[in-house]
Image (cartoon, rainbow, N blue to C red):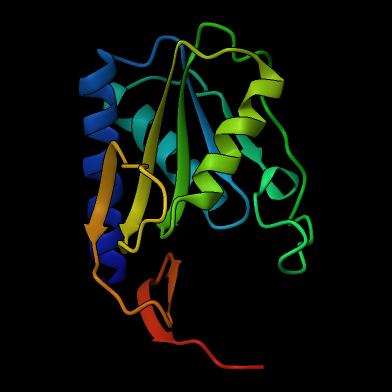
Length: 169
């Protein structure tokens, strides 16, 4: 995907979010550290543009490292700070991540969200769904379905989406 493809996907996802939720009332975006954070910011700006509002879309960040189910199986280091904009009670939370792979990060994020309230609904937006799911998790909004090999790495940035081989250490 090129930078233009990513821009168009963000615009499409934002339109789908507005349509599915009948506007922006009660909506909170939460970007998963680290790749989902810039994407959540882009989505928030696009949602504002689409709705023609100066109202700030509540946008937070979530580091689900300590909620993962593979603690002890591999080294885990917290990525960054969690910053949730207030209680999530009764709100619709759109979890935003750059790449959906096994589903384990999303599962951990769902557990972590419970510490910040009980959302009315949780939806999932990803730029790339690369398959290889290990858990029954499916995104609500997808920029691109991009089949990959398990050993490949997918990098999402403002410049586009790149696929490369994982370099063994």
